[in-house]
Image (cartoon, rainbow, N blue to C red; front, side, top):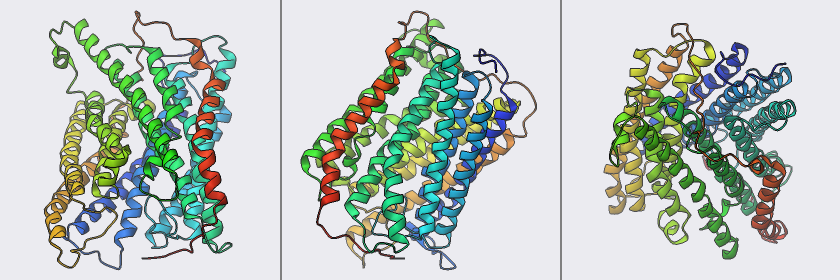
Amino acid sequence: MDLNRTNHHRFDLKDGKLVVAHILVAFIALLIGGIAGLLQTMVKSGTVKLPYGIGYYELLTAHGILMAIVFTTYFIIGFLYSGVSYTLGGKLLPIVHRMSWLGFAFMTAGTVLGVIMVLTGKASVLYTFYAPLKASPYFYIGLALLVVGSWISGWGIFWQYKYWKQTHQGKLTPLFAFMSVVTFLMWQIATIGVAAEVLIQLIPWSFGWVETINVMLSRTLFWYFGHPLVYFWLMPAYICWYVIIPKIIGGKIYSDALARLSFILLLLFSIPVGFHHQLMEPGISSFWKYLQVVLTFMVVIPSLMTAFSLFATFELNGRAKGAKGLFGWVKVMPWKDVRFFAPFMGMLIFIPAGAGGLINASNQMNAVVHNTLWVTGHFHLTVATSVALTFFGITYWLLPVVTGRVLTPRMNKLGIIQTIIWCVGMFFMSGAMHLVGLFGAPRRTAFTTYEGNADAAAWMPYYVFMAIGGTVLFIGVLLMVYNVFALLRAPKGVEEYPLGEAMESAEATPAYLDHWRLWISLSVLLILVAYTIPLMDMITSTTPGSKGFITW
């Protein structure tokens, strides 16, 4: 196979079908999850009561899993496979093609099984599926299949990359492919935690093969996975910001080396940080919590590097086009191009979202906002806005590219409208969540007046704003799903895969950034330092385990 093609060629339509399959499942999940989310906000505000015995916590679980795990994972795999196919030879190897479809089959079987369990009321254990809440074992089996499928898809990317390196000795890996490999390396390492929790603890316990479960250990294994999951969502968004956006605005990537270094730092620091989600839990020494909080703040560095690189790209592009003054570059940005507008809004909203993350990771401030709706608001600002808007923006060029169609002016306009609707809806919903969270309103609870408590009554206006925001967002979901299917029926044509190139004046990229053994070894070492002793304490602890509870 000729793998010497690197750019400016038509996308392989066979690989395009693979990408489209992943994107379609992602947006079907977005639609079902969006319906569940709309109903949640209505129930939470006391506006409606659910008919036919439908439980609030069923909706909460379905919304969380379909939006946060299914939508994102399918979209990410489809997006990364498109870039790997395009930059590593222009076509997936036959074995990689088979692996990717096998991964898709495992993931889809797991998703269908898991969602059936949730919608039939056998797994209302919320997005975190915390023990001792106990679901049907088939829900956990569904989760295991989903994870295994994503592993197989990741192995396909590694295979394509290895083949490309063997046939391109001494050449620098294309930036998109490099970032895809780092993303899936991080994913493979991080999901070991949740796989161990599901296979060793939850499935035997849910089948009744063991009577009790070590709750602290299960939560720690979940958060070993749970926080890197955030970066599994963000890193593909960063790929778009670093590699795609410069091309769309007509500029250049500020620094190839800086972009690669930021991804290496994310690989190192995004995994051994799960304890900052457990700051309020007993059973973990304050020393280990402190250590992981320090590592958490290290993740700020690649995020700030990303912000610096992006705004350097914007400003230098503006200067090259004759812009003057501190913010003159703003005037020359393509604000009417949804491929830029939607991801840029995602970037902009990531500024307050990231600041909220620093609050959550700080011990004293976490004590104020822990388990309140503040946390839910933060979550919606990061994954449901910064990440989601970037994914929406990607969709407007990705689907035409992989299907041999074009983005029409009408679709572009609908995309701009959809982005504005999403931002307005999230302003109301996430804003209300943040504010009422500061007043102590708990998350993960259905509508209640707490027997007429005055404090709880003061939360009600914010719940109404959440419902208004949720309704606006649902309109945004409907329009986005319409846009996806309209893009698949757009006129035939050729759209360029928008891959940016580094500035000519940028420093050469050091070869050591491609030294995978070094970075994987450092990543494993940091994880061992951060987790070995706490996990040994939990495993050897004489604290009695818990039986399962089904509270719904």
